[in-house]
Length: 339
Length: 218
Image (cartoon, rainbow over all chains, first blue to last red; front, side):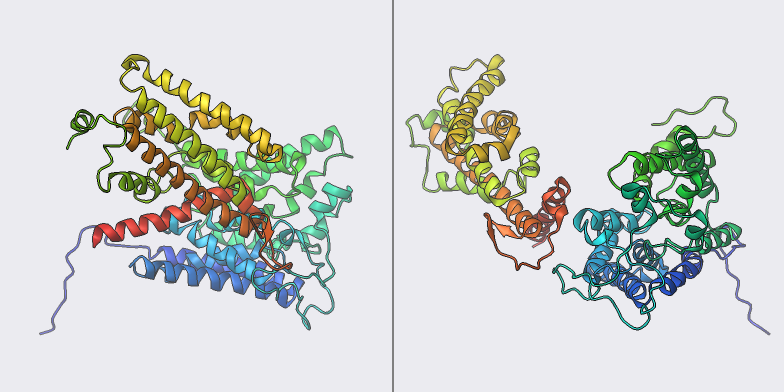
């Protein structure tokens, strides 16, 4: 007679098979086209920067887990995503030692100090980038022109700067559409920016591939599609109002939504499941606040780009948004007041 | 021995300093009960004026002077100050010494006065000073209060100096105004900004707590 093993367990008995690492893996897949386009546009520089941040993030996660006597959580892909996202927000000729430092900060201060994945208040990659932006303001605003002919034959010497030493810039630097508009009032065609024919961070230029990745994630229900829609709509409407008031001083709404890191931030960073609100109505509000802050920082702030700070501020208030739009408990008539 | 017993038995000036009592009071402030690293008091000046080692030393010296002098005076007057108005009296005494420090620094170096800014005047509300007045000087003899004030002041200066040196070396590549890093050193601008103060303080607290936990476990 055959022996039958019977598992006695409580519900659920049928599971969909979606775990944290499955979702994370698909986020990596969705990011890869945009990252690959970054390598195509900026050459080996971009690849080196992204590899450094990814390896740095994974190593940091591993050693911090070992140090705190916990099982290593490298295999859930979250460190890989944080590192890859950080690399995609950095300029292509960013010195590797700074990129490595940024990835250590990303994991240590962005995630691990709060207790690891699921407890982080802010998007870890943006914490790392905010640190780098404040620590090395010159290096992080030195951009490379895209599609240089020698991009697959040579690597910029600024990448190879000795640890803790100032990089020497030999590459042909180019202004991003945003800084060109902010400082010289030179506008770039929205079509060029959508296609990625402009200077910028490694992974933020190819808007088309980022949107494709976002559609893939939304289709697989691994991302809350309301967040990017809400952010982009708010940015579009808000900047259109100012464009109609004065089309010389303010950029066109198409320029605003296709320039800089708005798409990357809206689709891959603001949608971080841990640091965004959980209610559907809260998510619309969250996106609107991020969109509003982005436009305000871009138009009147000192820096040309404001998506990073807007998302970090949005992360900071997302628990309060959840509290504000707390849904009615089933069976009760009034909203429960819980603070 | 309780504190009141001590006050009764030791009436003369330095007689309360037993064999190691004075050293103990001094070392407690400097290391074991360090006002910044262990008690986490006086965060406002510790974060705000620790962007260079020189500022840290100046601030530490000023605070040590005020702390020591106010401790001594409050300890001398501890039997005359009515309990109901003690805080106001302490503040008055502290403010007197702060005004003195303010004018002395202006006379010595106007640049230093500018770089410390409002934080000299804010020594009045430094919680280390008021807490030592309330918790120690008002209950102990002059000798012990003197040693306690010195220890706490030096401990505060030591903490500020640690934070200030780290921030200055990494953030400006200099130490006490002298260049210590090679010319090509990339300065971490964030370290001289307020955020750098929080980072440095957090790292130092991490190290202190690590050792404290180790000591408790052992």
